[in-house]
Amino acid sequence: MSALLEAFLARLYADEHALSMFLRDPEAAMDGAGLVEADRAAMRAADLVGLRMAAKSYANKRAGRGKPAKASGH
Image 1 (tube, rainbow, N blue to C red):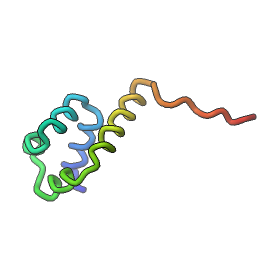
Image 2: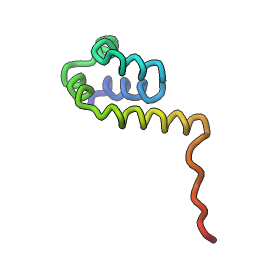
Image 3: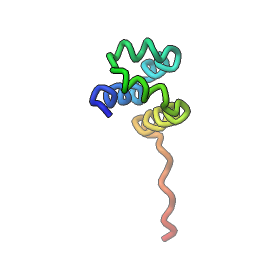
Image 4: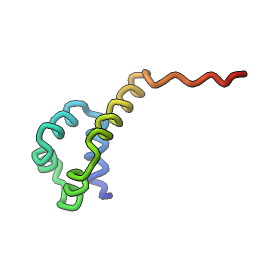
């Protein structure tokens, strides 16, 4: 995975607007990010449901709304 693709994914996970724009028009978002064809192919094959779920999970963690820890039973 290229550093450019890693940065693009990090932006999608951290920026709700960027994710929304990617989901609305992936090709335009990838154009704007300057992704090379190999990275674009990887994004075209990406699990979009998983991408949305991960972004939501990270947002919840940043907001301090992660799942509460399970009781240890002690």
